[in-house]
Amino acid sequence: MDCPINHAQTPFLCRECYRIRTTGSVCPNCRNADGLLHSEIADLAIAHIDCDAFFAAIEKRDNPDLHGKPVIIGGGKRGVVATCCYTARLFGVRSAMPMFKALKACPNAIVVRPDFEKYKIASRDIRARMEKLTPLVQQVSIDEAYLDLSGTHKVHRAYPAELLSSLQREIERDVGITVSIGLSFNRFLAKSASELDKPNGFAVIGRGEARSFLATKPVEFVHGIGPAFARQIRAKGFETLGDLQSEDLKQLISKFGDQGLWLHQRALGIDNRPVDPRSDRKSISSETTFFEDISDPGLLEDHLWYLCEKTAFRAKETGLQGNVVTLKLKTSDFKTRTRRITLHQPTQLSHTLFKTGRVMLKKECDGARFRLLGIGISDLEPAKGDAIDLIDTKDTKRTRAERAADAAKARFGKDAISTGRGFRAIAKRTEQREQSSDTDHNQTGRTPKGSS
Image 1 (tube, rainbow, N blue to C red):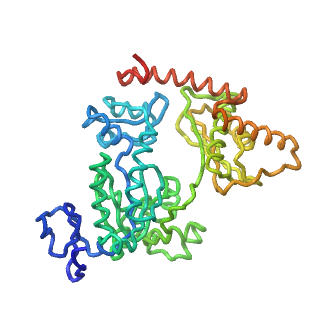
Image 2: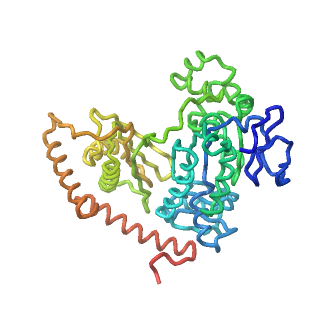
Image 3: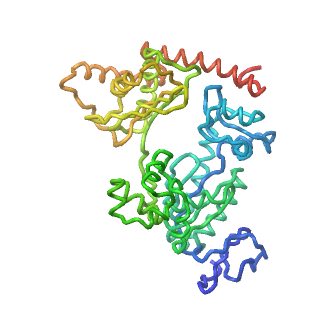
């Protein structure tokens, strides 16, 4: 470290030599004026790193012909946008948008099928670089992570802001993509900061400014407040986080229950969650978007069984079981239906998922046509031995049969064995995939992979 920070002057982080100076807004070493002037920049240690338009950035990195063009990662007329580049976002394209709407908004977009293996390789590379700075890295998705850099200046002889700025340039140079970084004193504000200066940005929110910074923001600025919850909050007279800040805590709890305390804390910039590299995943799920809307209960059950097998396989791979089963449906007019059942015993078994999911599915088969179906488990815990159902004796037989099938799959591959219902769903999906590939070829003018 060059020298201790003189807090009588406002520290300046130089974005060229990655050092904090205290001699005004120009770096005395390289005469660079590109940097961050912030009174707390040498004191903050919680960071959020977010890869900018990650999937699209990787594709543009590997295909120079895509540079400067609107790129959508997804595929299939019935599919949704996984992500898109910033050029496509200028046309109104956004993640989770139905593909036909995205192409209507941006007809010149180039659609690229996702290559998740390639994205995983880049993600692992970036994570390894983060872990060189601190062991406290909590990856929350393939393209974002929290870091706790407290005390790292003693090891690296550099302040957290300096390490992060250097890492940002290193990722751009070696991985070939940009990342945006938020630096603060807790996770909520670090993530909020990372979204202030995208792409390739570096933003800071300090303790002294947190409350005033949040006061003018709308209630949905808080991560975890979706459109429905935001409407509930506004209906009770709170438009901004400043409105929540000025409300008595007891009143918030009386109006919102347990969420009242959470709203109170977030509005004030309070977040006591640690950066935990051992943090368990929250849920395991699988879903599919149909090429054609489906209302037939039997066909929906076939797809449900296939998804239950996929979800159970992932649960068994990770050694987890869930206490809550969630069914997700999206109707032809894009309305989402979500139903949940809490189990008496946690499970990772496909037949238990199917039995539970089918109960919920039957209640939703009211003549509506569905374009998406999903099933998942949450409230996870390490898997234990299978519970014995003393009431349903056939359940024990089904469990033994599934475990035998698992053993066969472990030896010969996960597709080595399936049920008749599963084969029907696989056949239907294959047919849809072929139709979808033809559609993609017509939409983008590009030959699908594997075609001559």
